[in-house]
Image 1: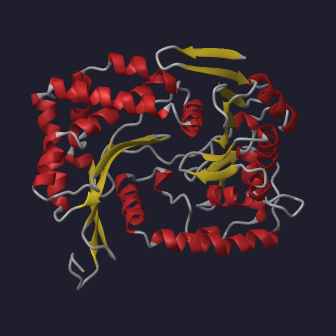
Image 2: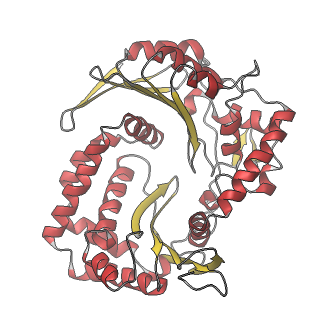
Length: 430
């Protein structure tokens, strides 16, 4: 195995790519009495169109999330969640736009739990009856999500920002789309994307890295499969699909969701650099320590619910702001004006250094979390980057880089605003 030593952050990691294409990463933690394992596939809500055997296939929206739910069923009629929980482990799973991950944390019986994780994720078991039963369960989940104003605002924002990119898809799908899912389509998608060459296994704890690899070799298929081509839609223009949209729901005050569409960096170090720079630019523009944040707060245009962050998925990247506001349009205009001002007049050097130091501290603090180590490593592996090279990137980052980022990104025609207003006839105080 390859041993990586990161002296600046005090981390050691072992890396191995197995013969079947699986990436294995182990963070040895001999001083801790707990273990964490994360087994993930580069397959998420955006991956509904792919090519297999030379033919393009279209699958229902929400199928990756549906597959995640069904993967816990086992041929003996049991449930892998219950099996893991019986050993004292804390198991769970999630599906995002770009990946699906299965994980557990435990303090005992680690190797038994890791075996269970690798077995149930790699060996699917579906029946017509169980798939149809799950449609009702997930359908109810979708209806609950759709009733949440925050989810509606974010989903409407993605539809406003992007013309074609499948990031517009709801990860959970719709009641109508999941009704099209069958056991056959689930098996087809599992066979395409749940292959070792499209997956990664990350472990943190007092374990032998070679033993992790040996167990993976024993359980998982030995042959590597070719990468599955995916369709991310037609090339996106820099401008947004729609600059404004609104909806009325049961909220006590207008809820804004503002997005600024940028250009995604290519996989590799450039992507990590852009993410770190984007996060720093967000803090400088309207983070809680920025002059604009304090002014908007004092004027009563935002409250403590307000946030601004950098988001990225394969093939797209954007800034997103959200929170309650009595005048969402004024907040949008203030952010655009502040971005233009910083780009023209420059960022205060003292503020820049303070923000950079603070964000660096957040990343270092995140190293204390086993789950953060493993999930970030998995994401980095899927995008061909080393997430633990962030100290060198921060060190090289200059004030002019933030100014250039804001000049390139913060423009009216790249901005969309979504507002969830209180229902008709109801005041903001009801």
